[in-house]
Length: 80
Image (cartoon, rainbow, N blue to C red; front, side, top):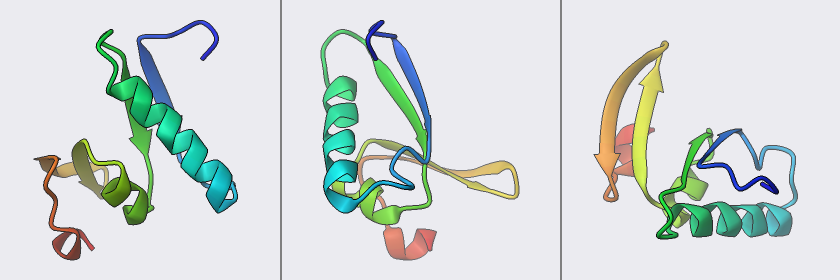
């Protein structure tokens, strides 16, 4: 993050973090995504609670295929 990249790729970035640190990291990533300087974060996660708390464009993958794409509003009961 020190080099201020235009794109951040994050694979389970909160996977081994305690809840407070996880929340701080997600706040930072969400802030980066919502800035006006065109930066983006692509994040893989199995944690639906994170997706609910920090919404954005969401893509669901099953068996290596993209099966669903949403903007903002997601029916999480249907996803699970």
